Length: 251
Image: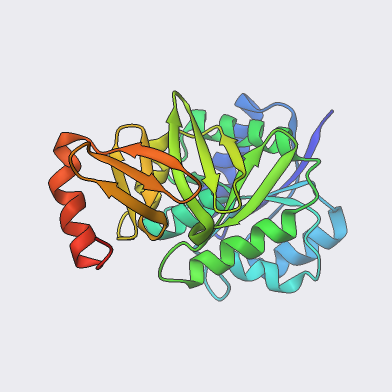
């Protein structure tokens, strides 16, 4: 089944390049219209009712994010096309919003279309886009959307006790005692949490929320977390961990 798609980018060359790449590598995507700016894009979306919109971020007069203001309910998926900042990239990723970096990489384009096909029946586009905007407007990421077999779960970072590595997956342990298995490596969360002193990678297998440290067994190099999680501290991390506990007045 063809995917009805619309392209919005102020540069004609960029529109032509993306159209050509989609035609060559994503034959299931049918470009039903292109627009050079947000107002024309809004008109085209209302006229053609696309399932998918490829949306440039940096455009004159209105940027791509402002497109969302023209719709009470967003009933199409968006793949942002951007050369944007690291913070924006994190906002896309933790909101389960897809993006492609300029200049466009073919593998990334194909992967983004495959992700769209996987989640085209999810009914929470509005919630994901709201979360993206919330994180873009904040100095730091506060909430994340985690993929599960049956959809997405939206979490406050402050409610997460421990991230536990499991190969290419991560177990996310929550304050309420529940656990979520996510198809992302622990490194993804380590990068996400850079600059947040309350999250600390104690070992190659764990990142902990220092707010939930219940007891530190210094001689054993073991931490007891709320919810009875036992977490090891590697020898390389021990000194840094103890320093952080003192700075945060937890020890």
